[in-house]
Amino acid sequence: MPDLNTPTTWQHFIGGSPVEPASGEYFDSTDPATRRTLYRAARGTAPDVDRAVTAARKAFEDPRWRDLSQTRRGHLLRRLGELLAENADELAPMESRDNGKLLREMRGQLAALPEYYHYYAGLADKIHGATVPASDLRVLNYTVREPVGVVGAITPWNSPLTLTTSKLAPALCTGNTVVIKPSEYTSATGLRLAELALEAGFPPGVVNVVTGFGVEAGAALVDHPGLAKISFTGSTATGSRIAASAASRFIGSTLELGGKSPQLVFEDADVGNAAMGVVAGVFAAAGQTCIAGSRVLAHRSVYEELLERVCERARTIRIGDPLDEATELGPLAFEAQRDKVAGYVDLGRSEGARVLTGGASSDGGLGGYFYEPTVLVDVDNSMRVVREEIFGPVVAVMPFDTEEEAVRLANETEYGLAAGVWTSNLARAHRVAGRLDAGTVWVNTYRAMSPMSPRQGFKSSGVGIEHGTESVNEYTRLKSVWINTAEEPVADPFTMRS
Ligand code: NAI
Ligand code: MG
Image (cartoon, rainbow, N blue to C red; front, side, top):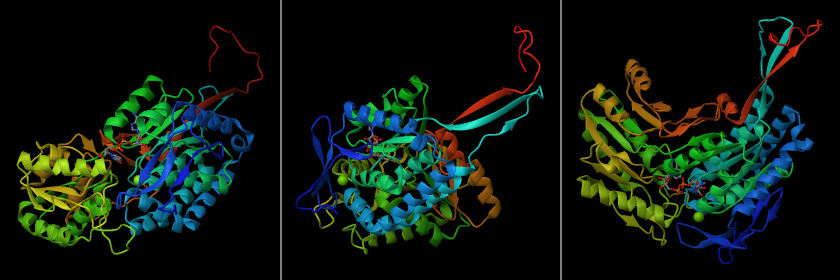
């Protein structure tokens, strides 16, 4: 842990070593719960990015990495998972301090994170091509899944270690090298992760980190000609810019973007469970998750009861120091994010929404950037507060009368990341899951996630797949090899084919 009175200075991590920024400049990272400066990180610019991509390319071609068997790659991933577990007591408070996430949530994430590395460790030597039937039996045609090269991973501040892992683990599993650009609000744990990767035995240059701002370090990485693939999690606006740049150079992009996920509570639901699911869905992590269940649609017959239960729990949520195990709601990750949330609630009021509970900023008794858990009613799908991603502890609740109407209202959004369905009717659960325009649908639960389960954002929520065996395709290219096994001389060159 950095000493709060004398902030540490972090350099980039390139080619296995700390590297000073070409600019000579550093920027502060603060603790949003107390506004104290935690550390200073290197302000990355194009020359640093170039150095990192060059190191990553060199490592990609180095026999120590290129010629490592897939099984050995798996061993390294397994070791990295173990190192994360061994260092959980350092990493959990480090990230909690940096973005205000509850220490108890970080402990939970760190208990799960090794499993992501272990999953991809097991997958590493099960990736292979196929033998393909050819029309001429003297020809052998087979496919090979190859790594693509240098992967750029640009990540946000809400769950840095977890979201970086969703990119790093599959990219390494498939033999690529990586340059990570963490969010400027949370540089520390990404740098530690790269150090641990080196300790685990990944050769120098396989995992690099350039810290800095999106428009400087981030844009330089996205635009670097040496990049073979870009993987991004963050806002839809930035994702759109990144996708355009990648497309213009014909490199692949995997994008995990924003959401405005609906939770549908039917008249046959266990309302107590649904209320817990709603609270967990939007107030956990102070609503700063891409999958936040920020729109609740409740059948008119359970609408009042659900609201009562959600508001009752919202009012008793303990706001405070994220490092205190009793705290249930920490701050927003930085001042502008808190102001954005406050601005949205004010906008909602002016649009005609009624604030049932919450609706105010708080300093959490610590001078930090907190916002109360907030429930909005008298809302409809035309309001910006219902259409746009707020990324804070704010939920909009509206009633519906029929299943048809619920599905229509739920799908009436530009996003399609996730959805929740609360019902005790089995047929309805499947029917509605089938009709929702969302990449992940949870029934009678919310926020469940596993390395084994693929996830994909529909519509403006993303492109490509993270987790699961399908994620391997995002970080590999498929080569088709044709071998002529015939003894006969090659025939007429003008009709030659198989
Ligand atoms: P952002 O999408 O701008 O930042 C995410 C990452 O992209 C950061 O590492 C940032 O430095 C980088 N970046 C920014 N501009 C870039 C560019 N032009 N080229 C390359 N990289 C760039 O998100 P930001 O500004 O941190 O948050 C703004 C809003 O985005 C939030 O209020 C929230 O609504 C949304 N957001 C959504 C997330 C999600 O998981 N769905 C995660 C983070 C933010
Ligand atoms: Mg910070």
